[in-house]
Length: 137
Image (cartoon, rainbow, N blue to C red):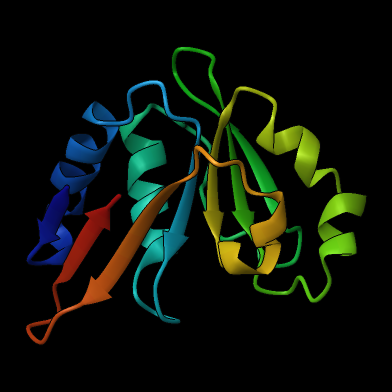
């Protein structure tokens, strides 16, 4: 599936399209270059799901927890600073990933051995006009 974001003002429409296609999937690996918009898109998804608190990158905390308007839990990971898989294990990544709650993971390649087979990859690519293509597979 592909979602096009031609300009930032349309990101919430793109997020709603993403939300409507989540289905029963729980773990999503957001991939893209630094500055591609992974955090911005996750923020729009969380807002679209009714998260009222501020959504930002958990760069230093590694994982943030949000609650949706219908009381579902979302875990938002930023694994950029994870250098060894043991660091992820020590923070309880296994438990988060197997919790049955939604998990949105940035820089998932740093914890690849811990990801379930059912992980959905979400690639965000920058396009020349400043827009983004979101590829979900």
